[in-house]
Length: 181
Image (cartoon, rainbow, N blue to C red; front, side):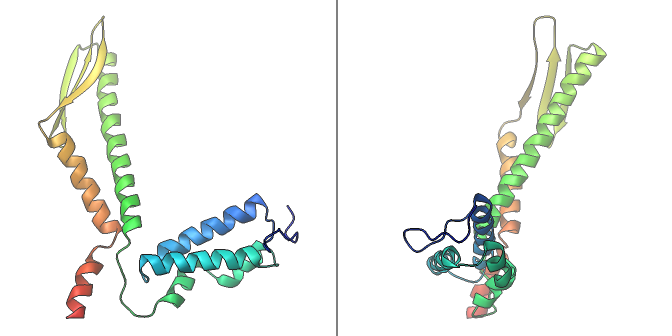
């Protein structure tokens, strides 16, 4: 946990906590820089800042506090008022939306199975966002199934696409082309 031991390449040996803190800060900075810089320039900026932090003789906490919040630092790098879409945030939003959708869907289906079991029924049918769900329980087997042509693929795809477009703030692409004309 020494902060002042110089490494062989002129960098300092940092504790695991300091390295993780710096990595989290730079990741958040990268997300905010995505809105104001093209990819190659953004990666170069983050790489240079990583080198600067690694060579700073002060503690990592003090270095990061001097930089301020990642959002405020990213704003300092912005050279114009135009903001770019945040594609990586869109991917995260789409993944989260799919996770929520499938969690709710499977909870619904397993809830139906629990109801069939507790009521002593052999089978129950219901609909979840146009998807026909069946829960069955007999002495030999129990389970759930769903059928619905393409709806079981289309519904989550639409949910993911909407979450992606909103999370990425894709309307920035449209405002960019209309302002550029």
